[in-house]
Amino acid sequence: MKVRTRFAPSPTGVLHLGSVRTALFSWLYARRFDGEFVLRIEDTDRERSTEENVRAIVDGLDWLGLDADAGPFFQTDRFDRYKEVLTAWLDTGKAYHCYCTKEEIDELREQQLASGEKVRYDGRCRDRARPREGVDPVVRFRNPDAGEVVVNDAVRGRVVFDNAQLDDLIIARSNGTPTYNFTVVVDDSDMKITHVIRGDDHLNNTPRQMNMLEALGVDNPVYAHLPMILGPDGAKLSKRHGAVDIRDYRDQGYLPEAMLNYLVRLGWSHGDKELFTTDQMIELFDINDVNQSASAFNPDKLRWINQQHIIRASTERLGEQLVRFLKRSGIPITSGPSPADVAEVFRERAETIQQMADNSRYCFVDFDAIDPKAAKKHLRPVVLEPLKAVRTALAETPDWEKKEIETVIKKIAAEFDINIGKLGQPIRVAVTGGAVSPPIDATVWVIGRSRVIDRLDAAIQIIAARAAASNS
Ligand code: GLU
Image: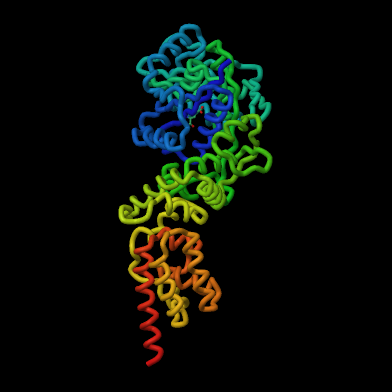
């Protein structure tokens, strides 16, 4: 039997971390077992479903590389099919029209509450012979009255529901539109879904869906209900905890593979391994290894994972990513070094690509002024002569190579009998405008000779002026 999983978001909101984790687990399981991954957009709630949300979902999955083998299917395209099943069920008595008014249902509810019973529809229209004038009926599924429904959940284990606790669910509204639990069942059956992997907020729907699958005469898929993702404060993850739309992470400079790596660890583990390539996840993932307990979103860890993936990304890919963010920040890249070289020099320190773009800005554009604190501390008259010597040597060095630059700096530090750090820091401040940068030889190299010489000249002038001022 071919494994077929599905991701079935409702476009009533954007794609957020929790739904991406659900999509990822479904996708991984399909990839792991050479199966198929189906994308189904559950848009029957027409008032709350929007085109923009569909776009957010499709774009988000696309960015993450969670490609579907079939779909996107839209439930609103399948109303004829739902109607067909509804009609068949009405004909065979598996479903029935319910003419109860809102007042009647409210009254029933009051009575049940007063007598301490569980609030549920009592099935009073099950055997109604005639329609009620002037009332558009809903359709209800005739749920079995007795017996148990046993969910052998791949994550939660055996969960038993009593049919006596389940009432006759509305499967079509009075305007004829089908409801969620019903469309899911028809679709999971028609689309030959073998594994339903979804959030555990759906666990209570499962026995109802299983009863309806039985009414359809098809086997149950395997169910796997994923534990919730909590915010760092222990409450259910929500907007308050930061970015909601997965595309915000893309725009903040997270790599999609890092996002997937971070999310796979929310509920799943393989020993104490933290870093996974997407191929490794596919190789190792199994839904049966998913943990039952809720896991908490930790933005610090996400940044760390992203940094690790940045460190490991290919130079070419990192260069392309950097270009995107430089452009977005309005930094011109035509007159500067190759972005791939810059990415190579800056990769060790960036937690996001946006940070890399911000940190490497001085490679592409001149800074307005040196940071005054750094200037005051590091551009002192004592380094005037050594800096001049560095300037001359760097202007003359035949090959503009990191190794050679390093040799020049070392040599001059030795000549002036100063610590290499004591020379490196003023050079850094001169060429970057600040006190923090990657190793000095790589920094000087990547900025490029002509900018380095100009910036050293400017720093030399500043120091000379300072020396003159303190002498007078
Ligand atoms: N459309 C449902 C949701 O977005 C998911 C349905 C399912 O996975 O069964 O919550």
